[in-house]
Amino acid sequence: MVKWDEIETVMPNKRMPEEKDPDGNDRNWHPILEEERIDTLKEVEAIVEKADQAERRADFHEDAEKRYTDLVASGKTIPWKKMRSYLEDRVAGKSVARPVAKKLAR
Image (cartoon, rainbow, N blue to C red; front, side):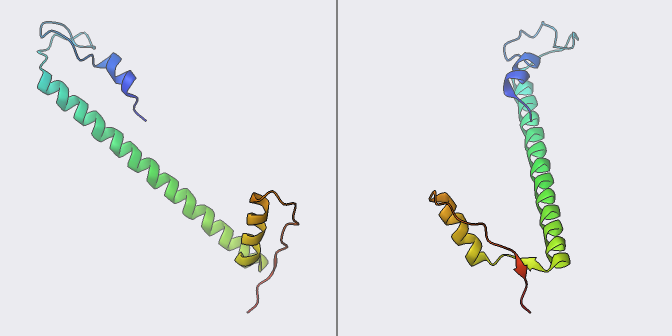
């Protein structure tokens, strides 16, 4: 993820046109061009964020597929009603026995 304080060190906002850019090249600096560079960095940051979201989504689906494969292979599961009750009791601080997985009824 792009950090804006790092960008400030690479692209200082206050430079005179006769100064050199961060690479040491003599270039004409203009505030409008600087704004375009910042907009471009924001676009790059947005692309990085979207790529990160897509990667997390793919990991989620991969995990779900693995869990479903394990469920089909073992044939065992815990009914949601029992699991929800167990989780609610745990959140409430009660000491409860963990529900046991059982074969699916067909």
